[in-house]
Each structure stands twice: as C-alpha cells, then as structure tokens.
Image 1 (tube, rainbow, N blue to C red):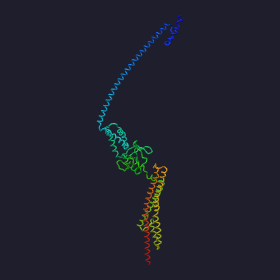
Image 2 (image 1 turned 45 degrees about the horizontal axis):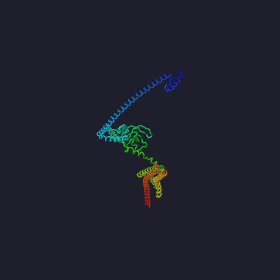
Image 3 (image 1 turned 180 degrees about the vertical axis):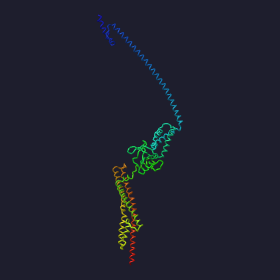
Length: 459
C-alpha cells in the first residue's frame, strides 16, 4: 500500500525538481522537502553573495569616478595656470622684443650689410684663382655667409681680413704645387704659376680653374705659339726677375675666344683643294723669285767687279764675254760682222737675265683667278647646303662660305708678293740689260771710230 502511494509522488516530485538537481531521486517526501529547503537556502545565500559583490563593485566604481573627477579638476586648474603663464610670457616676449629692437638700433642694418657683403665675397672668393693657393678660405667664408645672428666683432674683422687678403694677393705672381687634370682625364702634380686673378700657367701651357671642385684643368686647345712662349718664360723666370706675359684681363673670356680662332694651317685647310693649289703655285713662284733674285744679284756684282777692272776679262759675267768676243774679233775690219757677233752674245745674256720673269708674271696673274674659282666653288657648296637643309643651321653653310673667303684671301696673298717681286726683278733685269747694251754699243762705237781713223789715214 505504501509502495504504491510513494512511487507516483516520488516520480512527480523528481520531475518537478530535475532542472535544479540532477541528483539521485528522493527517497521520500520528507527527504524531498529537506532537499528543496537546502536548495532554496543555497540559492538565497548565492544571491546574497552576488548582491554583496555588486554593491562592493559599485562602491569601487564610485571611488574611481570621484578620483577621475578630482584629476580633471586638477588638470583644469593646471590649464588655467599655464594659460595665465603663457599670456604672461607673450607679454614679456613682446616687451623683450621691443627692448631688443630699441637696443639693436643700427645693428640690424649692420647685419643686413654684413650678410650682403659676405654673400658677395663668397661668390668672389669661390671664383678667384687665389682659392687654389689658399683653400682654407672656403670654410671660413661659408661660415660667415651662413650666419643667422648679428655678427660679432671677430666675424666682421675676419671678413675684412679675407677681402684685404684678396686685394693684396690679386696684384702678385705666385708659384705653388697643385694637381693638374690633363685633357685625357689623367692627373699629374706640377708647379703652377698664378698671375694675379687673371691667368694660371704651367710650363708653356695655359690652365683653367673649375670653381665647383676648386681644381685645375689643362686647356685641351692651347693658344698660338707666341702666347705659349710668354707662358714658358714666366714659368721659368727667377724670383724677382721681370719678363713679358700676355695677360687676359677678362679672366678667361678673351683666352677662350683666342683658342677658338683657327690657326694659320686651319685657315689654309678651309680653302680645301683650290686653296692647296693656290699655295702650291705661290710656293713655286716664290722659289723662282728667290732663284732669279740670287742669279741677278750675282750677275750684277760680277758686272760691277768687271767694270772696276777692265784690264782683266772674266767669262763669268755678260760684260766680260762681250769684251772677249770684241777683242777676239777686233782685228777684223768688217764692222758689221763684229756687230753681229756682239749682238749674239748680248741677246744670249739678256735672255738669261730675263729668264723666269714671264713665268712669275703669269703666276701672279693666275693666283687671283684661282682664288675667284675657290670663291665660286664655295658659294656653290653653300647654296647646295641651303637647298638641302634650309637656312635653319648656319653651321651647314659655314664650310662653303669659309672656302669662298679663304681662297679669295689666298689668291690675293699669293698674287701680291709675286707681282711685287716681278716688278722688282724686271726693273733689275732691265737695268742689267741696259748696262749690257750700253757696253756693247760703246765697244762698237770705239771700233767704228778706229776704222774711220784708219780710213782717213789711208786716204
């Protein structure tokens, strides 16, 4: 009876409390009740512990909040103090700035003038040849030019000393050792000579200064020999001695133009084939002129010697040959025959005296025509270049124009001395021919007179 009543109730109560207890089934209703009481008590205790923990956490949060609020209040106070201090500093700074401006006075203008002078001096010293000999000045002038404050007395004095040194050394010639860069890129140490601020040379070579690297390079193209000889004389001159030197007052500009101008041989090359032909004709003509001048001078001196000594007959001159022919045939009474024999000698000697003069005259006449030929050829080449490429690039026309002008000059240069030489030689030949003719005529006149006297005596 008890078992049948207890079992359904136990099953019902177990199903109702299974969500809370996963435990074993209650043995009786009383056990179930006690179990429920224990569970409720434990639940109540757990809830109280949770409540206590929540209350404790709330108090901690409130404490942290109060602490944060206190910190915020402190920072607000600090901000106010700093703002007050900042405003005071701004006011004090304005007062100090006003006081500085008042006390500085002309020092502000001095700073501006110093900076401007230092910048100008920096540019001047960097481009100066003296920087090669005194490279330590570069750091000094850079320091003075980059200053941001009012210069001190020492800085002003240093700038004045640098400018004074530049003025003093610019009027001196100095020799020192330095590295020189050759045109092929190689470097060598050499003794270089600086002439003030104008030129720098070593041996017979002119050098150029590169301010960017404060180095020296050898000019790839040197000026003509006369200028290089003065450079060599200066480099080898003893200290304290005096020598001539060609100075470039433009500090390289005139020297650059000088080395760009073509040399004599380059001018001749611009004439091309026609120019070479003109120079060949001129050379041949000058050789003939020299030969004729030497020949006529020797004939003239021998004839003068013969005129001074008529008793000694020499065959090395026309007068001697005429006199010999005359005296060899003096015994003949046929004046016509003697005259013809003398005329034969005179013609041969006069022809020898005037030999080569027509050739010189022809060469003097054809060289200007050859120059004109070169002019026309050069202009043809110029117009061909214009036809092909237009007039946009003058360098394309420069070759033809150079040939036209150079050949004209070459023709005139060749013709003028040849023409003058021909005139002088012709005058000298005419004078000698006149002497020869006069002497031959004098001998014939004497012979005619002696024949007339003999005929008169015979009659």
